[in-house]
Structure formats: structure tokens, C-alpha cells
Length: 373
Image 1 (cartoon, one colour):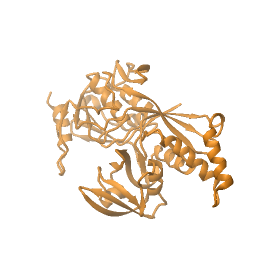
Image 2 (image 1 turned 30 degrees about the horizontal axis):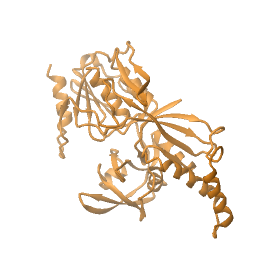
Image 3 (image 1 turned 180 degrees about the vertical axis):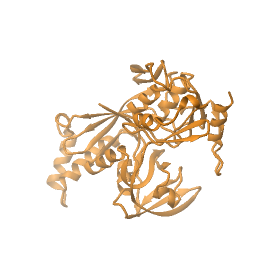
Image 4 (image 1 turned 60 degrees about the vertical axis):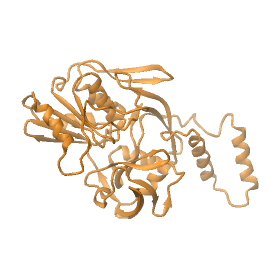
């Protein structure tokens, strides 16, 4: 069973949460069991509608409508083409512009812009509200549908109409094939800086591989930078958090106020005693918040930056027989101290607002804390 806490990269990604991936295609169907009204509407359309009826489009529309009626931005139905986008995005390789989107109060906002991406080069910014894609209005469209509009073949052009500070702008950019690592490690004198852009299936192992040449025993500490990280695979985030914790709860899954499962740290990793600071911002979501919450609540290190996004619901992803997929919210997760991230984000131990200049004040504060002792 695969666990995800993520979005859609465009790549474009739609922000999501912990997801259990299951293949129930042999038993799950919208058109079986009790559904007389749906059957009646379906039959009426097929027998009496004046125009031609595309049965596949009709069925996908019905499935999409059922899920949309839940008024849950994290529950979605993906047709086969949208489902392929979803799985490709999670793999870290995609053809798109390099942003991640989220639905907030009916508005489609850019949550993350990847470094060195077409979106970054074109001037798209975190917080931009997407109004249209190539003259296609995004109102009433699902995040999967919008992601499908933005993604496209390598070298093709796409124009986004966006709202920024009460100004409407048309920004044209080129789609490219994007292959992105999830972990970047640099040395800053006595500090190891680990930037995690998202949580892929093997991000924890990528961290281990890229830290092999770093002698952490000779460092004053490690900065884990998950700013702009929209999330990803749940298990990967838990495994990485475990590498910094000798014991304690990492995260708790809850359903209807019942504790379903607690994920606990196990001793034995080499990074359990290294001095640690985690950097977060308003775009740190889901799996990134699992890591930050585990470090903060277990008093393992300090969290610096801005309050995180606040995304803590749990989805199950069902693979359907024709390649389509259903993502459905089934539970929520809590930090070790019981904070429900569906209601608020992770509050930093040391609050530092982002400054729009070349001096990274948040990183500088994290480094100062590591070097202070």
C-alpha cells in the first residue's frame, strides 16, 4: 500500500495529503449496486437526448460529479489521462512548467515554483491566482483538469492568465521535460544544508546517498530546508523523520477522533544526535509538515521560518480498471503533540518572515542558531 501526502506538479501538482494507493478495479464500480437515480438519468440521456452521447465521457462526468459533490478539494476523480499525470508527477519526471497548485476558497493558487523551471524563468510567483489556461476558464474545474491543461509536450507553449495584487497578467511560458531530484545537499563551512523539494518514494534513501560524503561529526549541525515543499509520499517522510529521532511519535493517523495508528521512531540511525534546524514557510505542506512537526514536538531541533500551509488529511487512491483513479479523503493525521493540521499549520519556534531580496534571512537565522553553541 502506497502512502502519499502531496499535490500535482506541472509539472503541475495539486496539493494533497497522505494517500493509500490500492487497486480495487475488480470490485469497485460506480455503476453497480444501489443507484437508481443515476441509472434513471443515464437511461434518459441515452434514449431521449437530442444529440450524440459519448458514453465514456458521460460516465466520467458522472463519476466526477459524485466526487465533486463532497465539497472536498482533496477528493478527486481522475480519468485515465489525468491519472497518468498524477502518477508521472509523483515520479519526479514530467513535461510541464514546474509549478504546484492548490485550491483555496474556490481559487486556484500557485503554491510552489520549482527552481530553474520554465515557470520561474517566466516570472510566475507563489500566490499567483490562475484564472485561465490558454483562454480556458478554470472556474469549476478540478485540480486534475487544470493540471491537464497546463501540462503538455516538451517545447509547446502555454499562457496562464493570473491575478497578482489586483492586476490581471498573461504570462506565456514553454513546457519542458523536467527531471528533478528531491534532495540537494551543499556544505556551508561548518553547516550541512539539505534542501528537500518534495518527498518522492525514495527521498529518504536519496538523502542517505547524498550525505555519504558529508562528515556530519565535523559539522556544527544540519539545516533541513523544506520551504516550498508541497509534500509527497507519506512513508518517505516518516522514514526520513525517523533518521533524526531515537524514539517518540512521528505522526498519528486519526479517523472520527479515533486513533488508528501511531508511527514511532526507532533508534539506530547516525543522524539522531546531530544538531538540527528545520526551515519552513507558507508553502511547506503535508509530508514536509510531518517532518517539521516530528522534529518540533519531540524537541529534536528548532523550526525556523513562517507558519506552514496546514494540510493534514488522509486520502486513499483507488486504481480503477480502465486506468482512471479515485482519490478520497478517509482520515486525518496529527503531529506528536496532537495538532490537527487541517485547522492550522506548524508554528515555527523562531518566526522569521520572508524578505524579498537576495539576503536569505530565514536561512541566515537557521545557520546562526547552529553556530551559536
